[in-house]
Length: 239
Image 1 (cartoon, helix red, strand yellow):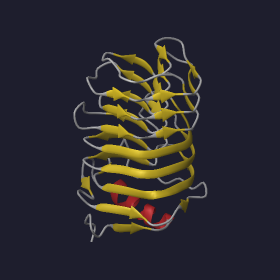
Image 2 (cartoon, rainbow, N blue to C red):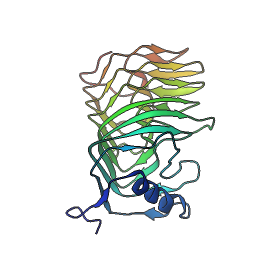
Image 3 (cartoon, helix red, strand yellow):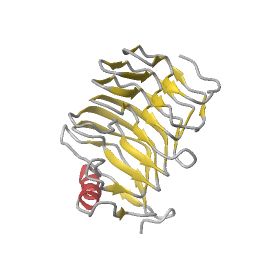
């Protein structure tokens, strides 16, 4: 029934494709699956087929709660994040593998391009991501200082961009990043704001705590081991 006690079960690529059809076919800004719960019961191989749940550029949004239940989505081969936009929900307990490459100037990541008033937690990204700006392993653009969170996430993917706001975990962040670790290489050939964990957090007052970077970070300006640019003191972060 889609409640917390009786979630919709996601058992195959066809189930993910159904979620994508509903979200992508809706009008811009529609609250698709609002307050509905989903739970994976087995790992899914997309076999290189593109599957996009929502779109940052089109404004189609997933508003639900998605529990990966410690399963894997692999075989991602896409021009956008697995989830385009997440609002008023969460994605948790999931690992993703594959490749994402985009030529659009937009937030992009292995998992989700843009989140607002939502939480991404216990996600591990193995997707290699190539984009232009707001490029990351887990979340491209993190909105809302007080109500958006990335927690306990890890990135192993290599992140590459041609402009700015590039990070292993988040590209541009106004929200909170806690207990996250990056192992992937983060590279920008453009204007900067490059960090092992977060790229640009310059407009943010959110919490940045207990974050670690082990990856190589390369860029031109505003380059940091953990954060490329930040206007708030971090705690217990190193890289």
